View 1 (cartoon, rainbow, N blue to C red):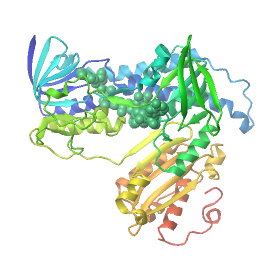
View 2: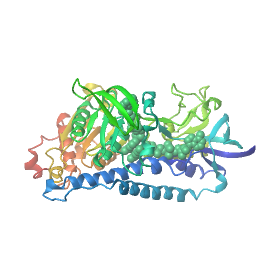
View 3: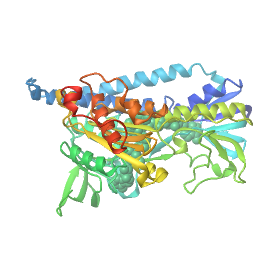
View 4: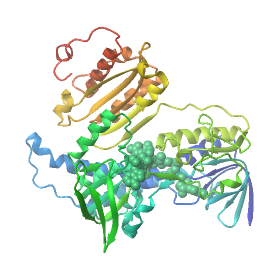
Length: 487
Ligand SMILES: Cc1cc2nc3c(=O)[nH]c(=O)nc-3n(C[C@H](O)[C@H](O)[C@H](O)COP(=O)(O)OP(=O)(O)OC[C@H]3O[C@@H](n4cnc5c(N)ncnc54)[C@H](O)[C@@H]3O)c2cc1C
Ligand SMILES: NC(=O)c1ccc[n+]([C@@H]2O[C@H](COP(=O)([O-])OP(=O)(O)OC[C@H]3O[C@@H](n4cnc5c(N)ncnc54)[C@H](O)[C@@H]3O)[C@@H](O)[C@H]2O)c1
């Protein structure tokens, strides 16, 4: 058995682990990064990047198919699925290579290969032949797809999102389970690429939305394009030959249908990679799901005796907000504090921001309606909104579907949060997140410049409505007279 003593050991060379390494390396030379799986990060290999590549191809097919609405005929849209998937993988590989290139900065001696697990609070076994003793440890082991046992009858026709990006060609049909962001992004993209598809959700939840008004609206809009039941009633899942047979109650009716699919895609959530770490040997306090208790500003874990530990956690492993920018930020905070240990500093946590790259896009910023109500009371918040259906620029682009729900605090007029569903709302969500970071009030947000004709004018309409609900500021005049057509 080889033995090694180091200052800091970081488990997992994903986004969080890499940013932790970069931060920790500023304090010590002996910082090892341990990777037990495939290097290159979940984001680049099987997450953000390949999913957006697939979505980009799907959008292209969709736009070609809808060109007639502008008076442009492109003939039959012929989808070469082999070419689509080849491009997804080719560009995906380039993103992975760019990560691997940047990892070459790490001294080879400090990059350890093998699965790590705790032997005691300061000792890790890496693979079978190496023991690493570290003064501080960062857990950045990410997460993996999780499929409930009820899908087992599907056998090898049960797949997860990782497998989709390895397809050489697309299947004819697919049953997608899970109406979270993964299910919606991949489901809509595959449907637009010609896959016959049904999407079955659970308990009515839909992507990142919490506000029932926008959730119900989005459900209706998606159903104009593909079958989506966020509260599906599924009777049986069986395997017959090379197909999966699903019997379910049809959305909005009492009819029970039986349908055959080539695959069942489980998009039913992700589990943190903590179960292979032998955390019971680490002396940490764990919550009911086996996740270490930690401080979200220092990313420092708590020991079983309640004291602050020398172990830190970051990224999807923390189960807080499984998003790339969060993994990055948490990794940086954990790395700096592991480097400074036993000193520690509170890191800056930015405004909550989540975007689903569906069409229309879905986004949430800051507090949800329920969170705002809990914090300020039902009478303490004002709600406003606007539709994209008559929004000038959205009409011009034939993308006039969607709505926005915005929340602010009564009295102070402070903007609190929003849920957005509409064309390219990724950009509006950023504007709102930046406004929240600046602690802007609704009136001040309305004083910002708005070009014409742009989608931001739709946001201005929602802010005007919110201002009206706050009973603040001047009475707003008629929109068209005040701002021009579609403004
Ligand atoms: C389909 C999909 C699409 C997504 N799209 C987006 C998006 O558009 N925008 C966005 O913000 N987020 C998106 N995400 C989420 C984002 O990809 C993750 O939040 C992020 O990649 C998590 O980074 P991480 O460092 O925590 O984990 P990872 O990148 O998974 O890194 C963890 C590493 O730890 C290693 N490891 C695990 N256990 C051990 C062990 N015991 N010993 C050694 N090594 C170990 C793993 O092999 C892995 O390399 C998407 C996710 C998916 C699945
Ligand atoms: N654009 C992005 O930023 C992006 C894209 C993809 C993933 N992600 C991240 O990855 C995380 C994981 O995404 P996800 O969609 O896999 O998980 P999720 O937890 O967000 O959604 C899983 C969904 O599956 C449903 N579900 C659970 N069991 C089910 C069952 N038996 N039948 C039907 N539905 C069932 C749940 O109700 C939930 O709606 C997300 O939370 C998100 O943070 C982000």
